[in-house]
Amino acid sequence: MGSLVGVALLTLTPQLLGMLGMHGPLVEAAATYVRIRALAMPLQLVAMVCNAASIGVRDSTSPLRITAAAAAINCVGDFVLCQVRLPV
Image 1 (cartoon, one colour):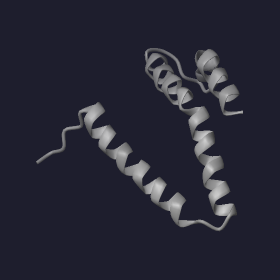
Image 2: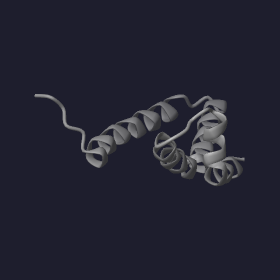
Image 3: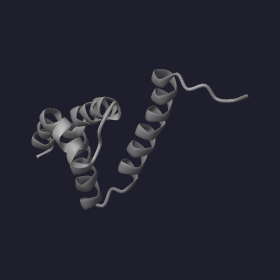
Image 4: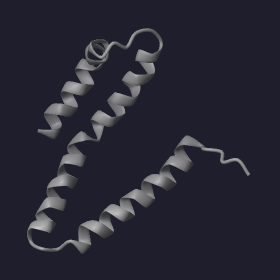
């Protein structure tokens, strides 16, 4: 399912953005963002299934630790890849 949604987003991005009322130069930037997010769609679905399976076997600490680690990696990645400059 995640792969199907990802492929649909990759191929239909301009049409979907047009249906949302986006026009002009903003469409190109939004399309790039949507396509990048679409590539992660299958992995996100796997993560959600693994999280649900862990909670289903009454292991709530492992998903919590994994989610916290993923959030920390995401924050560091944002600073490194996006070159965010914080005011000092």
